[in-house]
Length: 242
Image (spheres, rainbow, N blue to C red):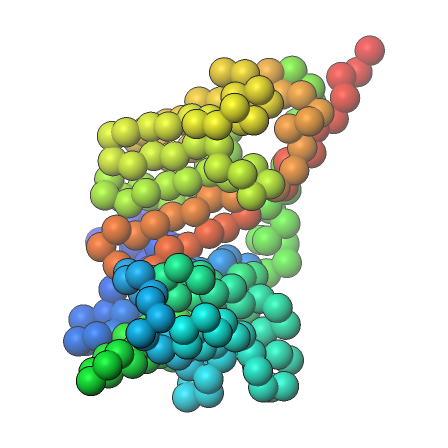
């Protein structure tokens, strides 16, 4: 195997993650600065209690109408408002993930007469400040076009979603593409977005200064119980030179 092919495979593992082979456990590999969502794949109901643990310490709980994140000072200090709990499903999101967030995340579901659990082994790969800036920052002049590259090899079965300032603007699911499904997006971009089905890259044409901001890519790994979000680009639009 050539060094180039080997590096490509390593990059895929680090970016997309791989499912663990152990029963009830999944291995998740992400890059520092990503956000990762650990999915329960169920709908929470009032008869269930869901508890999330990090390395044996409770970090979140759903119990009926009760929703609580980081009740202990140690948890608050470690995660600093970077945890988010989905009230409908109990899924847990760790935002702006750090190397110190590596470890075992365990979900315990307690229902009438039964207890089940799910374990995620999360490994965070560090990146240098120079790499982080290179990946995230891009400047472009007004009226030019820019292409945002996912930086990963697209798996045909996975879902890719592009967000602009937390608003969904484009999505690829298999061979299906959706661009600007809501009126606000259609008004802002006016047929100026283009998706590449093969690579997942997003092109913004005829750039305007209102297009400046964060463009985030979410990758949902269909065969696994987690998804990864990454700020792909912080785009700065420079006014035309007269």
